[in-house]
Image 1 (cartoon, one colour):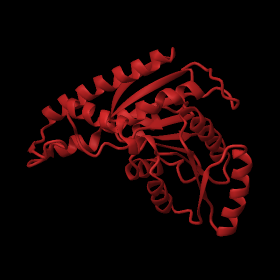
Image 2 (cartoon, helix red, strand yellow):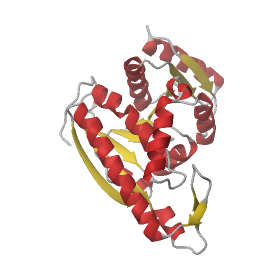
Image 3 (cartoon, rainbow, N blue to C red):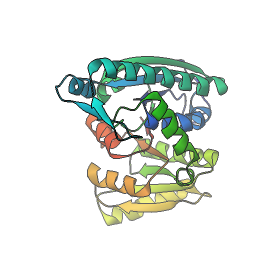
Length: 270
């Protein structure tokens, strides 16, 4: 992707990693705001879950409709068809979002785990991840679920949540979250992460300085374990999580755990 953008930190290159279903609808729903703020173009990566395809090869594998609760055998042929349809819908949705904003876009499919997609975007410093798809849904189900999410009153009131620690990426992530909060008219919550309560108090002072004159809800987590952090994120129930690629999330395993643990898109600032 070519350099560009209006961010004071320089050119921002964005990739959005999709996996099919209602989680993609939520990621693409907020993509326009991210694009308008940070990036002149977007690379879409549709990730086909390699583990799901391996599961489909096993005997006695079934899938259950999320709308009818009926089950039927899960086969690789059926899975290929469903994934192909979902990839087409994801590509069209990405195209519409990017072209409405007058921005360049690209799209590719790949099969593997999350680290496969991360390795395919080494020069990207903004990663927008949809939540992990927990089951296969039909294209009709995906549209219905996406519409329900977009029109839900609860969804409309969910905040932008930023994770803030002592790292430079976290500072940029908080600044990005502030801008997105203003652009989307959503309230902002900040999770302060440090090893001790005293360190959390210091982070609170730094966060208040960065936020001024904007206000936000500040929550402290005096535990550096990634599991504790994901618990705090789930409690906040964000519409979008904005997080810096610090030590907790530099490894793909950390990103994978994050993606499995929350039900909202995550914008990772590298």
